[in-house]
Image 1 (cartoon, one colour):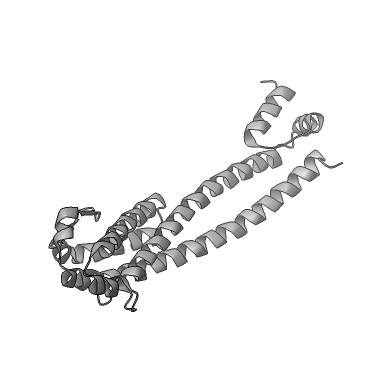
Image 2 (cartoon, helix red, strand yellow):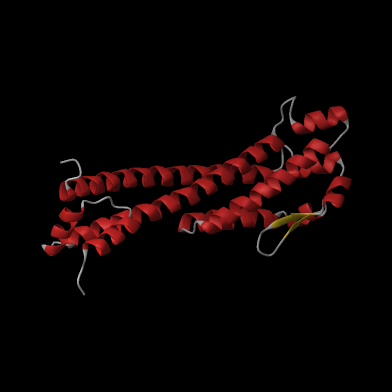
Length: 221
């Protein structure tokens, strides 16, 4: 099969490589195409890394949101959710915070599933275990833990719960929420380390690729 300049340009365009027509064709005709293949593979790997980085950022955001939701509930400060609820006699803000906690728990587990690794599988299992171990107490408040570890809420039943029971399950002394806060913090730290590692690797690959392109195709000459 004869390789034409047009074919090469199209391949390079799809791969995202800016090229000079004659220099690229000459380069191929010299049969020195190992480096070109390497560059194409490197570019594809960078795109894959970018997608992975974006997915990890979603996980990081979910874990951070879960940690913040947990912290809001277990705060024992005078302006904390339960302190205000006792003062006002209304559980409205507490109930909103509980629903946010559960939403972020489910989202974090979803994002852990979307980023499979030994570490993420471990954290996903730990989150599921924490929920399962508290399923009976949660169930009394209208919060159901599924077999897959997901959590759902019967809002009417939750609304009927008294403040004392809510505080026992979700307040400052709640082992359930404390463990969620601890695990989400660890997930966030783990993801941050992974993102930093990916950033360093991407930078090295990008520099090597840029150098290769400049040298081979004489873009600036």
